[in-house]
Amino acid sequence: MLLGSIINLDFKSFKKILLISILFFYLGFNTLGQPLQIIWQRCYGGSDDDFGLSVLPSSSGYYLFGQTSSNDGDVNGNHGSADFWLLGIDSSTNPVSTKCFGGSGLDGAIQMKSCPDGGYILSGEPWSTNGDVTNNHGGCDYWLIKTDNEANVQWQKCFGGSCNDEILNLQVTSDSGFLCSGVSCSTDGDVTGNHGLNDLWVIKVDKNGNLKWEKSLGGSSQDVGTCAAEINDGGVIIGGLTESNDGDVNCQQHGGYDAWMVKLDSLRNIEWQKCYGGSNTDAIIQILPQDDGSYLFLGKTDSYDGDITDQHGAGDFWVGKTDHWGNLLWNHCYGGTEYDDPLFIKRLSDGKFIIGGQTKSNNGDVTNNHSFTGYTDMWIIKITSDGDLIWEQCFGGTFNEFMSDAIEIPGNRLLLIGATNTSDNTGDVQCVHHGPGTYDNWLLMAYDSTTVGIKENSNFSFRIIASPNPADDYVKFSYKSQESLFGIEIKVANQLGQIVKEVTLPSAINELTWDTSKIPSGIYYYYYRLGNTNGTGKIAIMKL
Image 1: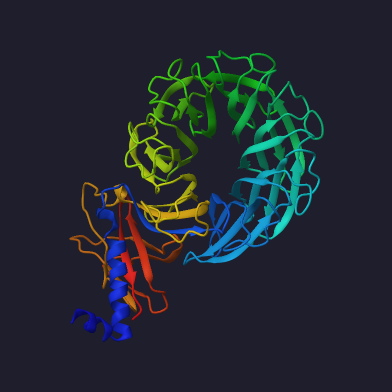
Image 2: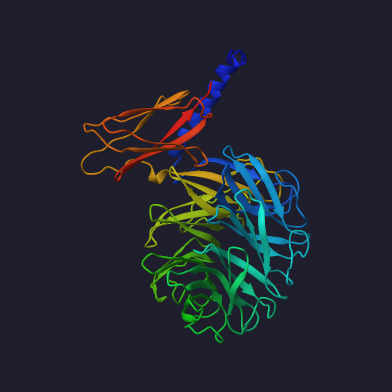
């Protein structure tokens, strides 16, 4: 009887039931007990390995930057082995453009950043000497590709010498140029002043791709530059790791590889330097200059001694803060007894920080790891500006997942990008995988349920209600209050975080109607603000 009733449903009724089911899925996700709830996810790629490394907004949705060895599925135009891969998706998460950059060799992608002119800068290290790669100096070089806002190439340049030059970090500078840091064993070409073996190598490139300056830093052993950032005084702060105790390296070392921070003045002379860590391997991965002149750094540590006091085992996420002169103010470790590898840190609009990467642990700070022993989950944590852990969460399935980047989206959401090796729809991985046994680019939109709610001030509170919900052709925003409220700002965003409606309620008006007759079906998020009071809500638009 039930089956017959379902079969006899007309299409409009069936569509309504389907949309209501979707509505309850989306509107009910914040009851699942995790700080971040997955709103949607999607896998992109082909039959070989595909990795997501960076995500940024575009005019129609988002650009996803990564590396691909595929030449089918969502990928076409691969030049051979591994290429840079730039995928454009629309507001419905569908691919709308795909481009590969590279040659016949292995061309490793690193990062994508947005540029002040609306375009993008892509970075990596090519081993190719053909295809899109021109003027490779030998081995691998620092490779930059500058595009316009439609991903059309404006210029591309290789920087380096005849030995290997591996870029590890890219930053856009205030003059629209680029600061690149990494490691080089070259003594020719663009590289001067190498001290022996691998040196930390930092370069400054102008907006047209011209090399403005370069500097090698290090000693007779191994020295690596993992990050660099410009400072308001015209100088540069650089982070990495060092094994040397001669040459440029002049700091109190702890043994093994130490984390190394170097401050260059505006003339690129060493102003000061510091080593941090313990008797094992310690590295700085990223440095965030703070408004008060201090520095917050993200690192990785295997040490249990020296500066390190709370390591959990194997390797931990490691965050420290220094004063203006590099003196260590505090540092904390996050992780479990297995390897925990951080990849990025981002400051959020609420002044807190998120850190993402991968973990093999399932104890200590790490809970609910989905993977088999020896495999990794994505792991993301949120900390205060003083390093206190607010929350942590794993995302993954039975095999390997890692997180490379995240961006904050209006409506208390985070867009996470990385890669998944799980193709059997286990754990959190619930998307169509393109190559079983290989990696796919994995993109997830997640809702931060810990920020839900209204902040009430001492004099009054209010809540904006959207009705009807689900809606079809219109939505009414209204509030109830004993007082007349002035200047209530309301913004509505789609699932990709794009603002589709922005209004301010007129004074003494407690209701406003939004015409949604031309708004596509889907889940939308509204957030509102009046002074220090704010809140959020969700709307389902259902075209029946």
